[in-house]
Image 1 (cartoon, rainbow, N blue to C red):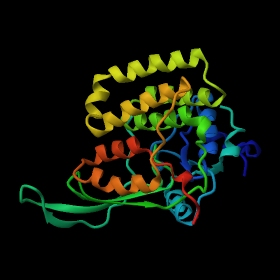
Image 2: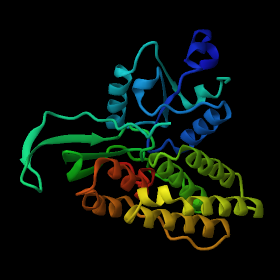
Image 3: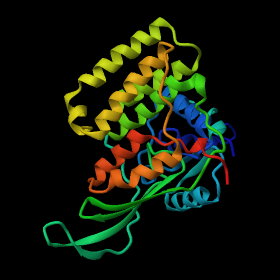
Length: 292
């Protein structure tokens, strides 16, 4: 059911859509983000905030099952639409974690105290989250003890081809800034990403990015929040974007296998909020993973 054909769906226009992308849904997701920005809509950070679910791409069975769980739990009245449906519509807080904790066990923490052990999945349906990724965490308090990563959805071919390297890094930068709670900067990175996709970078776009990069690099609050590994990755991404816009060489993104090999160790010992930043800093592209 397209939104253009449903007069009764006007009441959803003021809502904040919750957007879910399959690993092959990057193109649709970018179109949805542009449409929402043009209508001055803001995405919902949790499905509990809204009655509109926008699904981008073609989810495989595992991701489709997770989406169905979210859909059943969304408040009514509700509507589920595709990226093409959204084209017909006229028209804060840090991202909430999609937690579905099992019953807690007990174990000793590092000080010898008994703390609850929680088994918490992050993703695959989560705001500003790499499409197709699920991370299963074992937590004591808010500290990660163990992590297991799984590709629950793959795309069979990346959207981010060689001629889209700057836009690719800007897309990941936008997510990282949103996860860090800097929504205005995240949106600005998304605008730069869309402009970079419109064709070869010109001097004006390069200058705009350089100004933006200086603002991001000089932020003390962001520097403190992303200290260590995440800050290193942030700085690398800013350098890569600048190089790509100027036509220089850019280091290839890590493969899924490389990311899956290092991510559990990087998450171990991290606080839960920082775990989200670590994932965003790595920004795995499961769309590049072959199906099957």
